Every structure is written in C-alpha cells, then in structure tokens.
Image (cartoon, rainbow, N blue to C red; front, side, top):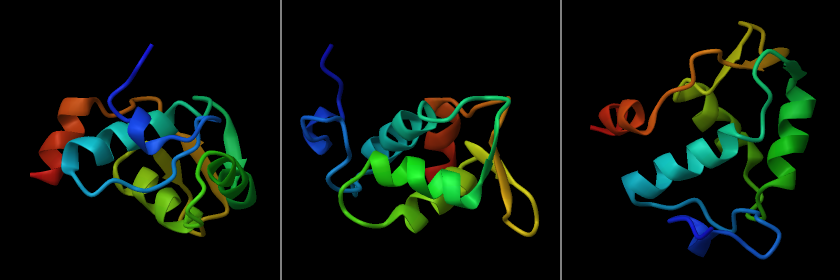
Length: 99
C-alpha cells in the first residue's frame, strides 16, 4: 500500500530526509512511532539504534527529540529511560501542535 510519505523513504523503508511541510513531518513522526513497542522501556542507546535503523540522513538526535516533544515517547528526567506513551497522539493532535 502506497503512503503519502513514500517519497521520503528508500527501498528499505528508511527516511532519506526529514520533510519540511507540517503534514509530512507529522506523518513521519507517526511512521517512526510504529517502530516502538508500547509498554516496553528503552535505554537512550536503544532508542538511538532503532532510529538509526529507520533513517539515512544521520540525525537520530533530532528524531528522538521530535518523538519526545510530540508525545510519542516519554522519558525520565535524566534521559536514561524512554518508553512509547500509552496514549499515542493522533494525526489531528499533532496538527494542532504545529498550529
């Protein structure tokens, strides 16, 4: 099935760029959200490894920050443990954040 962000993915399903348009950023965030298991805890290193598997442009730190900022991932204050939030944001929720 073809998706709206396919143009940003290589043949292996990895992001080749982080889109600049709001709608495509949101679709990208939701795409990456699916790479994390709800209810599972991750170390920062594990989050980085997952993100590095799913993009080719070399900025896993920005992607991790985006996932946290938009409520996909939660984390401890010391940033040592992460988890996929039980209540994942919807497309509409994220559109409101971008204003």
